[in-house]
Image (cartoon, rainbow, N blue to C red; front, side):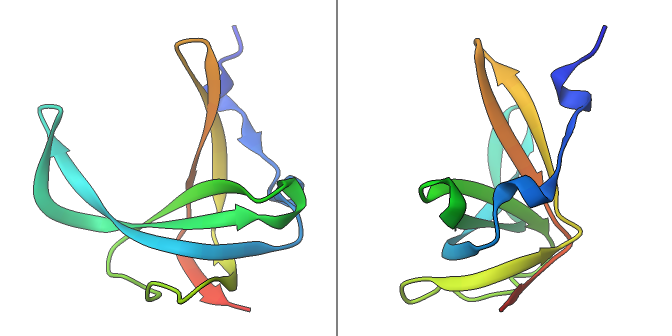
Length: 102
């Protein structure tokens, strides 16, 4: 049986432009509890071609871009987007290896 988690989203379907609007720490979890250990950062982008819908992209490691003052157009390296289902609702998760301003 096909699992929705096994499907990869074509990055081209996200649109031509992504605007970075927020940078937030990503924390380590142990036994379903958040610790104080930062393992990476979530870069929140608005997808211009999708009515500014937001997508959180996680990049493990040190912070690669500062919190934007307003928004900054960005592109990601090694971007992978996947869908998953939770309580009957389809959501998306994304990770990348790098980010840079365009």
